[in-house]
Image (cartoon, rainbow, N blue to C red; front, side):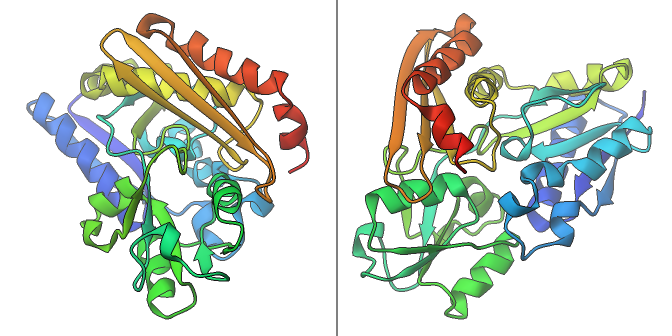
Length: 304
């Protein structure tokens, strides 16, 4: 196979990620031609509605997956945190690129830290995961919904609609907007979403030539961490639009997985942390989820 067609959303960040994957593929396969096919997703067509009300971030995948299934594209590039943990029949997450910084970032024009935001300050984020953690730690802040691509969200901040917003560090770095970051939020303050900062490549299970090409850009350490985090979410029966978080870190042959489930109003946060062998990463993720379920996570998620 000498030509590969990549399906991607047409937002600036999605295009950056697709081009990044194209460059990694060209580095590893001489003579390969890679074309980008921009696809408008359902999620992007409704930029002002809350994701949870629309059915979650799976809306960013639908059209890209349909393009794969009908053969219009060979692979699709996604932010892993936007991918549902339940695989679509015939498709699979076949590679994960080297992960960027997984943390969240506070972006504010007049404040350099969450602790410095005054009572009643308006903080924007579309993530229920971020909302429950921010409300638990800073109940005096007003946490409100914020949708749109990175530049749209920054424009809303700059126009005075918000006092601060919370975005993924990875997206800001990739768009060369790291200078906008006021504070990097440690996982202890805001535990990241499963797969945050990681780029995933999806392909048809029967497309052997594309599979062989894509596997060459897989980053094993990142893939192991992502698998553990997605195992937490899968066992909880949840998805990325619910108030839950999962984050894994490797240290030599050991993996530590942290999970969190919270009530939207911040009145209760459940946390769990487990460590095990790298080879047992998925099992460690399941153990984190089981611990959370034993302490009432299912009831919290059912109430969202």
